[in-house]
Length: 231
Image (cartoon, rainbow, N blue to C red; front, side):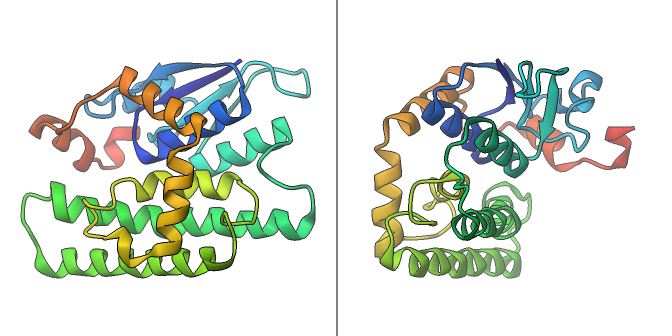
């Protein structure tokens, strides 16, 4: 059984997408990041960076004690290796997939996240910051669009690289982007959106939380963190 410590954010959706695709049994343990549940000592034991998602695999393949994993990219690799799915054993395809997974982890996710922050959540609308991150998000969309010009999915067949990137494209309007400007990305986006596992994954998210707006108190919890929060 996979215990998934989760909240319906882009990084959280990555993991439910994989679990639904693979048909792995899992149990969601909600971590309400707007009320500070990510700072509870029991959660920090498995996610020392006080970020969700995190998993605990109570039945690892080696038959030993439960294994805990944090960081969404690491979780996707772990689950892919556990199931033998969505990460090819062929070295060329495998590393093609992994480099695009890391592209998302180091580029698309952080840049789109800063885009969201300065455009939507920041108490002051800083024109330079908004323009900086909207433009960088646009550049990254362009990179992904070019990649998809001659292939169905990011690494050929559907893989963890697609699962990692898709949730960060879902809020494209909030990121100041127009999918019509990226026809190959748009085709890819709708192909993933229509997958039954994607539909189920996002429905699970709605079951956990369907809050369209973030309260001022939640913003203080999320954006006022310092080292004191993890001591």
